[in-house]
Image (cartoon, rainbow, N blue to C red; front, top):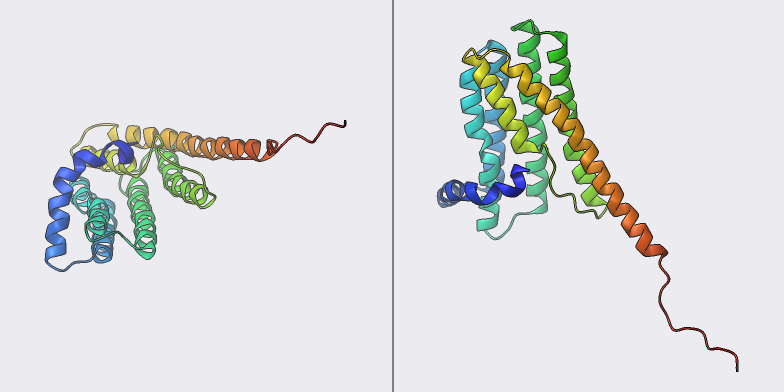
Length: 219
C-alpha cells in the first residue's frame, strides 16, 4: 500500500541522497549490498541482546537504502535485470533476518506467550509468500499491484513494535505482530484473488468467438 502511494513524498529526501552516492562513485548494487549486510548485522546482534530501541532506529535508517538504490538506478539511466533480482533477493533476506531476530528475542529474552511467538512465525512465513505470489504472478503476465501489507508496512510495524517495546510500552510488540500476522494472511489471499480474477478474464477472452465474417448464406 505505501509502496504505491508513498513514493512521491519519499522522493524529496531520497533523490538528493541517491545523487550524492552516485557522485562519490557508488553503484546501485553496491548500495543494495551495503544496506543488506549492515541491516542484518544490526538486527541479529541488537535485537536478540535486548537493545530494541537502538535496533529499531538503526535498522530503519539502513532499510531506507532499499529506496535509495532504486532511485540511483533510475537516475543513472535505468537498472539492470540482475540489479532488480539482487534487490528483491536482499529484501527477502533482511525481512527474514528481522523477524527471525524478533522470534529469538521473544523466546530467549522476553519469555513471550506462545501466541505471540506464533504470530511472529506467521509474519516470518507470510512475508516471503507475499513477495513470492507477486513475483510468480508477474512472471505469468498478471499485474500484481498493491496489497494491504507490503514491505514498507511490514518494516514500519515491525520496527515500531520493537522500538516502543524497548521504551517499555506494554503489549505493543504483540499487538504489532498480530496486526501484521492477520494483515499478511489477508494480503496473501488478496494477491491470489488478484491473479485468479485476471486469469479468469484472460480465459474468458480466449473463449470468445473470433468475430470473422459470417459464412455466405445459400442462394
